[in-house]
Length: 218
Image (cartoon, rainbow, N blue to C red; front, top):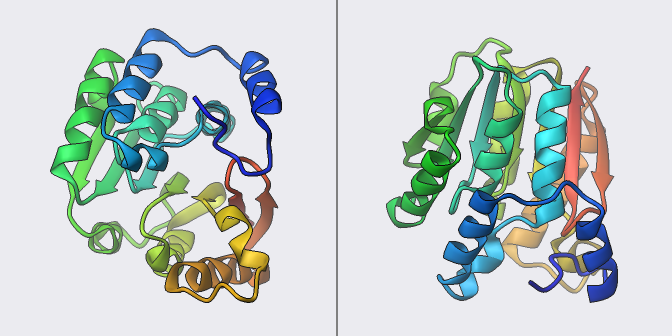
């Protein structure tokens, strides 16, 4: 597989993978199933991102997690694997087709009882959640124009110490190019600016894959 980060060459990317937790049979199966979809397979997170999500989910002792944008279920599988034994993950997506592959992967991994899939606009699912700070961990990897709205719904529901991660927040370097003014790039810029200026959270933008903005509730 080619590198998922514009910041790494192929050799360095291979070294990163070789020195990270090895993939298992289910993960490799899911990569193959996703690759068979064609160009849209580029929406799948990178391997190093998956390991990172599992590690963070465990560190946060996550009992309740939310994912916005599930695709074929790779990130959800990685998050679910890091949940505490009684933990639960709600996944928001609009595609029955792509998430049907996710359901198969979760079943193969023995995670079906930990994951609830909500098909429909993610913003509606988020707004239906209790207003209380109940979320331990949240991951956003969906339509980029929706990122600022997702942020506004998720941050108040994060518990103190809870984590919110957003993917693709470097946009292949487009965020620093003033000539790029499309709606997605502008939305990501707003998201990153809002996160770093929000006194409710502590934020770091990590140059992992295509950029992950990570915020922790104070």
